[in-house]
Structures are given as structure tokens and as C-alpha cells.
Length: 108
Image (cartoon, rainbow, N blue to C red; front, side, top):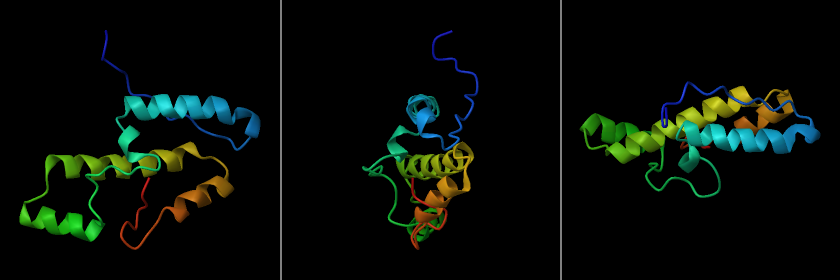
């Protein structure tokens, strides 16, 4: 059935350069299925708040938009999935580089 996806399996990159192109293609497809495309890449989702503190403040006040909630959720999922997708420790260290004071869990 069109549009009826089973839960996609996270493609894992083993660190071997010969396998990178295949992994990248599979990762992009996975990100599309999981609605993570806007959370990844150079252009951050414009709905992502400036910091987790800003997000928490709007959540407490009840003023967080649906788009902001979706952007934060997508960012959290993207970081989690990337953590699962990168097998060698050297690549996992890239995740720690995504951590900032504003986003302690990382920004995809």
C-alpha cells in the first residue's frame, strides 16, 4: 500500500570508505521515511528554537508552536538515529561535536 511504511531499519555505517556511498544513499532514504530531512544538513530547520532553554520556556508557557515541537522532535530523533548508525568509535565522536551549550543533546 502506498504511503504505508513498515518501520525502517537504521542503516549502519561500518567506517569502511568502500561502503560509504551505499550507506549515504540508504541513510537519505531512511531520513526521508522518518521525516528527518529538515533536521539534517547545513540548513537547520527554521522552526528549531535557538536553544533547549528557549524551547522549555515556551513549553512551560504553553506557547510552543506545532512546527517548533516537530523541529525539536526531528532533531532529537536525527541525533539518536545517527548515534545508532555510526559503528566505529571514531565516527561516534562526531556526535559529541554536535553538542553545544544551547543543545546539550546535539544539533543534527
